[in-house]
Structures are given as C-alpha cells and as structure tokens.
Length: 378
Ligand code: 0WD
Ligand code: CA
View 1: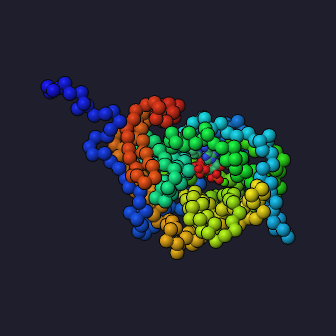
View 2: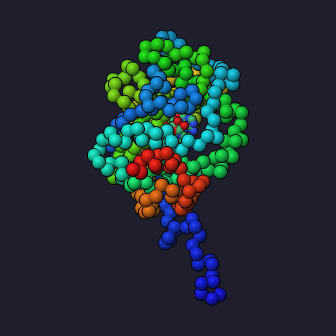
C-alpha cells in the first residue's frame, strides 16, 4: 500500500495514545500499611421524596427505633405488604450523579477547604467507592465506571454493565421479593419522628431517600461523595453526623459455623466497606428465617468487623481494600489528561482480569448534564 492510503494507521477512536494502560486487582499487590483516610465530615444532605423529587433538606431522614428488648426477640414479617403496598423506584431511569450535582450546584460557593478545593477532588456516590474497595475480593460481578474531568474535578459515575442489565431485567420473582424485604425491615426499625414508634402499616416506597454529603480524603485524593443513610439514632453517644447514623441490613439466619464463616468472608466485607467509607459506626443486622420473619437482631460495630476475619487465610483485609481504591484513583487521575466534560474515560473491570480503559466522547457515555456544566461555566 502507498503511504497515506492505509486507513488502518488511524487509531481507533476509543483507543488511548501509547501502550494500553491497565491495572491489576490481585489482593497480594495491595497489602501494606493502611493508607491515610480522613475522618469523613458531613457537608450537608438532601432528600428524595415519594416522587423521586429533590429537596435540599433532611425531610426523608428517619429515626432509629428498635423494638423493646423485654423478653422475646422481634417477630417482623418482612413479606407483609408485598406486592400490594410496594412502590418500587423505576430502575430504567438512569440518574447518574444528578442529585449530587444539584446539591453541589447549590453549595459550591460555601465549600470549606479553601479556594480550589473542589478542583482536585473526586466527586462520586459512596456506592461506587464501595465497589472499588471490594474489587480485590470480588469474584462474581464486574463494573464499569465512567470518569469525566471538568474544571480539575474528576466525576465518577457508574455505568450498568450489559450483564448487570440482563440480570436486572430477568430478576427472578423471589429476588424481587427479597429486595422488598430489605426495605420492609427499615420500616419496622425506623420512625418518622424522634421518640415515636415505627408504623409498618404504610407503603414501602423506594423512591424516598435521605442522602448525606461528605468530605474526606484517601491518600492524596480529596473526596466529595454522597451516600444514602437509613436512619439517625437519637440516643447515639454523639449527635454529630455521620457518627449518629445507623445502617440497617438483613441476612439469612445462620445455624452452622460454616455459614457464619462465609457470612464474615463475604457479607461483612460489603457491610464494612459501605459503612466505613461514610463513617457510620454501627450496622444493625436483622436475621430472617426461611419464612421471611426477622427473629433476632445483632449490632456489628464497623470498626470490629475485621476482627471476624483477621485470622482467616481466606478473609479480607481493610488495608488491601483502601490501598486498591487509592491506587485506582491515582490510575484514573493519571489516565485522564484532557479537561473536558464531554469526554468520558470508561474504566471496565471483570473478575479475574485487570482494569482496562477506553476513551469516549458525548453520547452514550457522557454523564455531566448541560444544566450543571453551563451553570458552573461562568
Ligand atoms: O443509578 C444507579 N446505578 C445508582 C444510583 C447506583 C448507586 C446509587 N444510586 C443512587 C440511589 O438511587 C440512591 O438514591 O444513589 C443513592 C444511594 O447511593 P449510595 O449510598 O452511594 O448507594 P449504596 O451504598 O450502593 O446503597 C445504599 C442504599 C441501599 O441500601 P443497602 O442496605 O441495600 O446497601 O441505597 C439504596 C439501597 O437501599 N440503593 C438504591 N436505591 C434505589 N436505586 C439503589 C438504586 N439503584 N442503589 C442503592
Ligand atoms: Ca440498608
């Protein structure tokens, strides 16, 4: 072929210049001392109502109200109200970072940390960071994270993988009911006002959410992230959020030491990662029997969860989780060189493989809404 005729010399559009960057996820590569993680402080909050509308206040915050501990344990029927008193959120609506960006738009003038703090920070959902923390130990579900650099800030928003979408659309009826049961447990454990009692007679509407917005730092990565909080404990030793927040979980009742071991290795890792990031000190677990009744409760202090696997060869290690996350954030910052809200660096990971990157422009991956970009570009 003559020079200039070979169209194959043109780089494919999604390829990055230079050798294809990738990042391994093996736990052994991330052991070592626990990295610096700034105690998360709450910058503010917002609520989503029954119609999934944003409110810049705490109206959706509920109050921890466990059953009296006299005599026998609880007897919560988690299947009550299913499906007739269930209003599930429309999962086809991809919200991306929109609610968090709305909060940021309203509060960017009042951010602490000095001028330019936001430029240099990473903005994302807590749930995305949870997925990063657990990646070195995850063997089932991969993820895709879209990264857009805008005015020095790196915005990270999850993209549903084709496999996750297929699974969601084909979700078995029993799994749908199980999801409901998790929300029903919250209704048995939370009151709408401090000092009042839970009312499980109403509907379960998963559009409703209370989200805390926090500032932290992992290594040299300043973080601004938001996470959904189940409730506040009005009797907590400290009234300062996030240390007064409580995370609620349900899990299958366990009977054998093997079942407990597996619970410590898998579930407790996810519970730890999620609550540690936000600074929630306690996770209250309700254990359900095969009939779907919660018959016992147990509080797991977040800072004690690692003790259950500390001496387990097949356990997890908080340092590995945090070192991996810090390394990923550095990898992302180094990959993203050009500042442009229409650009998306798509980080993809499947268990057993390294993290890979591809570069995209505009639809379908660009996720920073024009109302945000235009308001901030002044
Ligand atoms: O659109 C998406 N793909 C996502 C949306 C992914 C992750 C989060 N979000 C939104 C949710 O709509 C929710 O309002 O962000 C908010 C929560 O963010 P998060 O705290 O960062 O998420 P995560 O830590 O994964 O989950 C916290 C709670 C869950 O409690 P459990 O006990 O199951 O971990 O938020 C709820 C759920 O109750 N939740 C959701 N609710 C509705 N839609 C969703 C979702 N996609 N994901 C988590
Ligand atoms: Ca929960």
